[in-house]
Image 1 (cartoon, one colour):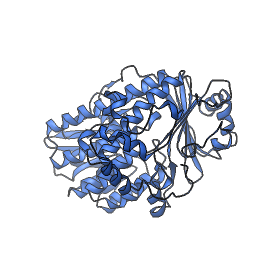
Image 2 (cartoon, helix red, strand yellow):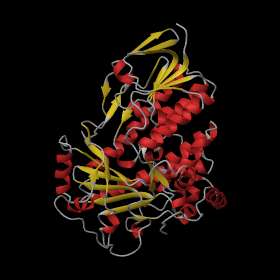
Image 3 (cartoon, one colour):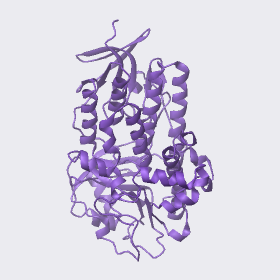
Image 4 (cartoon, helix red, strand yellow):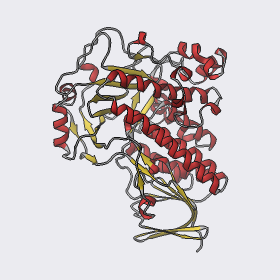
Length: 480
């Protein structure tokens, strides 16, 4: 069979389009195949500091300069105001008891705020995926990727060093296939691969949509004292309750993404959502004027783990190899780690040994994240325990970001590797400090005090903070 393309990428979410861009920058031909049509709704919307850094590293290494502005809120707003997104200054958690209004207290025993940036200009973002994924696709096309949409595939055939992909009115012969089509995606179905399970992970469902007119939580609260480290709504907001949690992510186009992941049955769509809110009076007040702008989407089984992530001349992105839960926004960094590794494999012509190592690391990272999220689910009724477990995640993630920004990438080569260590060894951000009473600002002083844990000097930290804009002026509202 003659070869039509060197590489086929199946699925044109941001991960698939990014792989297509890299393929072109490495001088290979690529076809990007999409079952739907852009712009289109997609779940998985909240970035993190580490994810933004990984995207920045990828953009610089493969000369994808058009992507650099969207790694920070400030440059995104200055360069691409037409792409909707949300300001994410940190992670906001509120713990609720079913049937009771939320009540704060002086000891903040039912809230947790963890800042991810010191001001708006270098803050993270929520991605309005309809806009952002479409932007990524257009950039892949600009770089020379062939793009076909509304194209469903149903078979994959292997013939020596070539692979034939076929569907109604479509076929292409390629040298390698990257599956970026999400959980239980094309290759999982076409190859009839068995599904495995994450150890001790709860059986959860999800129900979600986009809303208009969602009230800001801060307008409903009376704080006991002090100024929060950031505006609490400009964040990934989590409402935790026994058995599940609700997310609230605000975009700057007036739309708010919200949904629930829970161990309870929520297959009733709007009725299930209304019934849940009736058990959470304060959240019900936040959504009192809210109207869905899309139908409700129900996911009957959130968690998914494939048994294979690679094979002869094919590989899955982590987003196709496994799906956990959006509780800690792990999807973006897991996907971007996978993109970085597959890009390196592409440079080496996909040797089998390297593919097997990619698979091993992919499942190691997915299992590690799933183990942590399962423990968090088990602690939903004990918020003090939930906070303690969360500290390990934030310490590991911030350690990895600092190590890579301080030119010590060998200290952070896999996602959340620091979870294997005592928190004292990786805590650079002043976390787990009782004196801060569950409000954790983003402070340079904490990094200065703990820089020895990463093997760098105070002068190196000072240079890094200056280089990354840590001390820069704010854009919009900013809290100390």
